[in-house]
Each structure stands twice: as structure tokens, then as C-alpha cells.
Length: 126
Image (cartoon, rainbow, N blue to C red; front, side, top):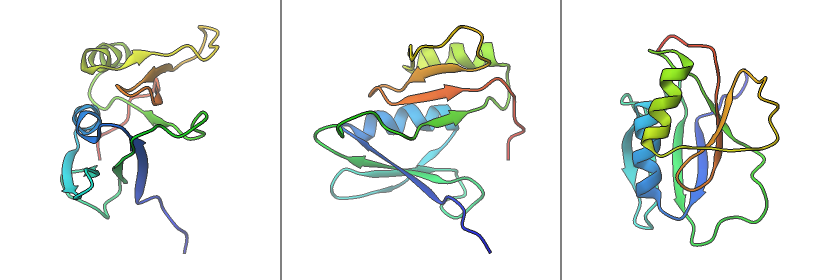
């Protein structure tokens, strides 16, 4: 028996803003709200399914240094160019981390500057 990822935790200044962004990106819903302002978002089926949930943990100050973990996403119902356009309209911004321009992915940031990548391959929805 092995482990699997059940939750990802992302520290942020404004969980509500990031919840709206990531719910639109991933077609997730808000599953839980804590008294401290933290939110849990995930698939409509809730916690424990094949996809991990995301805990948006309220932090007044960003953590020092560059995060060593980022999220990769794949479009499920459109090609990469159409998904890139959608993500940019939702508030994602291009990020330059030294790409050559030959990569098959786009590096973006969410509204709080957390890096994530839009990969080329299109995946079937779960």
C-alpha cells in the first residue's frame, strides 16, 4: 500500500480571491470555510476522491524565499492556446523564469504570484 496526495496547502494573503481563481481554473467548489479565513476547495464530490483538494491557508505575510512546489495543469476540453487565453482572462499572468521559448508549457502566476504551469497535453476529465 502506498500514499497518495489528498490535499495541497497554499499559504496566501486572500483565500477568497485565490479560491475564486482556482475554482474557475479547476472547476472546483468551496468545500469548507474555517474561522481563521482559510478555505478548502476541491471537486464537487468532496474530499477523498481521485483529485486532491487545496487548502488556501490565510497568512498575513508570504513565506520567505521561492516556493519549491508548484501546480501543473492540463486542459480537459480545449487546446493549450484556448486554455491559456481563458487563464489569462481569469487573472493569471505570464512569468519569466528563464524559459527559452521552446518549452511545451507556459509558466504563469496566479493572482498572488504563485507559479504554475499550463502543460500542452489535453487530459480526459475524470
